[in-house]
Structure formats: C-alpha cells, structure tokens
Amino acid sequence: MTALMDTHVFDLTVVDVVEETADAHSVSFAVPGGAAEEFDYKPGQFLTLAVPSDQTGVAARCYSLSSSPHDGGPLTVTVKRTADGYASNWICDNLREGDTIKVLPPAGIFTPASLDADLLLFGGGSGVTPIMSITRTALAHGTGKIVLFYANRDEKSVIFAKELAALATAHPERLLVVHWLESVQGLPTQDQMKAFIEPFTSYDAFVCGPAPFMKMTIAALRELEFPRERRHQEKFVSLGGNPFGDAVEVKLAEEELAEADSDTAFDDGESVAPQGPVKLEVELDGETHTFDDWPADTTMLAHLEAKGVKAPYSCREGECSACAVRLLEGEVKMIHNDVLDKDDMDDGIRLACQALPTTDVVRATYH
Image (cartoon, rainbow, N blue to C red; front, side, top):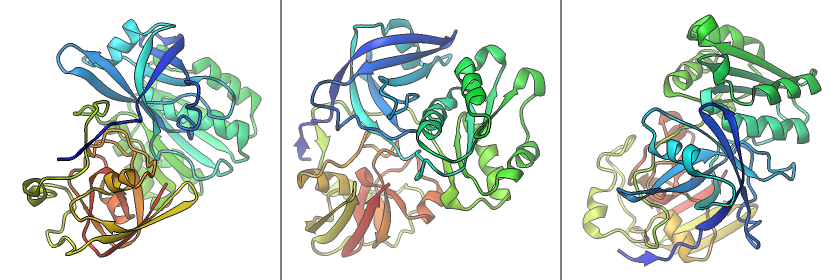
C-alpha cells in the first residue's frame, strides 16, 4: 500500500463548555488562524474528534454540530453520555476550557439543500443536535416554515429546552415545536407518527435519533409516499479505525482488490474492473475536476487527493457519510459500506473513500 501524510487534522482549543442537561454537554472550539475555510460548515454537519484511549491510542468519534455557521458564534458540538460510551463519558468528564483536541474538519450530507424550504424535523434524544443547527440557521437565514418533533424519555432529558421555547416564541409564524415525552405518552407508534406527519407532506423531512426511532419515522414517511429526495436521515456509527493517523490507504494490494466488495451490500456480483485508466469528472463546490487517468485499483477519494483536490472525508472506512457523492454517469463498487441503505444506493449515492471504478467513465457530484 502507498501512504500519504494526512493534512486534514487540526488541534482545536476548547473555549467553552456548557452543561445542557445532567447527561449532555456542549463543547465550543476556537478555529485556528488560517483554517477558516476548512471549518466553513453547513447546518447539520459533524466533527470527528480524536478522544485519547489507553487501549487504542485514539477513539475516533463523530459528533454533530449544534451551532449555526452564520451567527458568528463558536464551533460547537453537543455530546450526550451513553451508559457504556467511552468517548462520550471522557468528553463530558474531561474536556474543559483551554484544553486542546485533534479534530477533522466538518463533514456530512445531513443538511438542507435550501434554507428557504419548509422543513419537517425529527429529533430523538441527542439526535436533536444537528436538528438544532438546522433550526437555528433556517430561522435566521431562511424563509420557510419549520415543524420540529422532539422525542425524549422525560422532561429533564430535553436538551436545548429553554432555547427551543424562546425560538418558538420569537418566531410563532414559522416555528412549531412538539415535545413527545415517553414518561407521559409512551413511545410513539408508527400510526401516531403518520397522523402527525400528514399535514406536512410537502415539507423536506430530516430524521436523527436512536435507530428504532429513525426506523419507525422513516417507515411512516415512506407509507405517506414521501419522495426519497425529500427524506433524509442521519446515521451514527462508531468508527473502527483511526482517521487521525499519518498513513492512509491510497492503493489497494491486488489480493485486497480480489476480495473487495465480496461481502458488501447491494453488490450485484457482475461488476468488472475496467482494463485501462478511467475518465473521472467530479463537481465539488461549484468547480468541475476532470481526469483521464483514474486507476481501477485506486479509490475515488485517493485519486482526487493525489491530484490536489481537497475532497471531503472523515473516517476513510465506509463508516460515515462525509465523503458521499451522487453518481451522474457510470458506476463504481464499494469496498466497504456501513451507512448507505438500498434507497441511498438506488438514488446514486456512493462513498468516495470506498469507490473503485467499474466503467470507463464516471461522473459524480458532491452534495
């Protein structure tokens, strides 16, 4: 394998820590001088933090940004403790103002295409974190209406309770916040969720929270025939590797390529690597990059980086959506995929860090 030095890692200084609830802390960071462009983010994106670990050296974890990119405030993630969550407990117990931690730049595709769209937002527990970023930003810089369904175990578990109440009071014509407390109402059913959604079927839906909550909500949206392009969900996967190391894969050994995709979901078993270099055309941030020499044994992300393109990524292992692209022409196969479901695949979404070409021409666009 060929290795490249990772230049995307930054040391960020903690400038504030706020205890939102007994189990959730918001941690704010100062962006280093000269790195403003790298940390220019979209509402709904996340940061990847390098949490120190005695066992592995680093535990890489993705945490959604709860701050808005347009209000001048600091870069902020909100982290809720989980019972057996090493990283979340370490962050809540140890990070204090003045500390530094290694961080990858913002990434992710859980973000509205337009802040002027009408938004139907679903947050379960700490899943409200990216929802809060979207809400703050859309209210300040958009024109659409926002309906937020926020489910929690009980009243003391509600993160951002006071701010949500203040925002709803300040924007009564645009923001409706509905709290669902398990301690009072029990768990919501799919039929109850359908009844809630029905008046808002023209909205763009965003869902984030525990897996059962997301599965039930997405099922209700599907049953109401929400089109795929207006249905979004954020998925949390604990990263197994170390994206902060100084070595990253650029080329795969031949024996690895022979096994690539043998157990990957949605592989049709019929893809064949092109005989020669592939033409790759990628649109990123309004600019189109075209190359005629993409080797069949090199991932899309690795080839773009080798050409000097600053393409987004986080885990490099197919365990997050930071590097997601949408295919416009051609096809690729993925070595590994832990986050894209069949709907994503059918919609042409692929992970650039895992994508190997299977056609002579591939055109794609970053979200």
